[in-house]
Image (cartoon, rainbow, N blue to C red):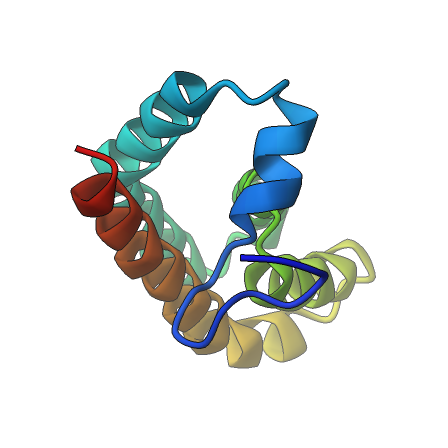
Amino acid sequence: MSGDVPEPGEAFELEPLLDRLGGDAELVREMAALYLQDKDATLKTMRELAAARDGTELAVRVHALKGVALNFECPGLRLVAASAERALVAGRLETALALLPAVEREAEALADSLRRYLASAT
């Protein structure tokens, strides 16, 4: 990957991530494995919070997912999570709830890209 845009079909930008981590590919693999291990539970919790209309706790979870997106240089997830977080902080729960399917899609796209990366890195 190069530049500011991921390769087609990739949700994260490997080169800037490696640069930021001092070229530590093993750390990238560890981060990827942790994300893949936690993703399903994270998304399930977010769906439960949305169903309970708990905007406060949902904002905390969306903020954490935005941090993951920043860590992985994942612009799609970062943008949609940031939009959902802004809506939640502003008290616009319905707007945030409408964004959650896009948050999930981007989180899944990141997971797919990370699985491909891990498969190619072994």
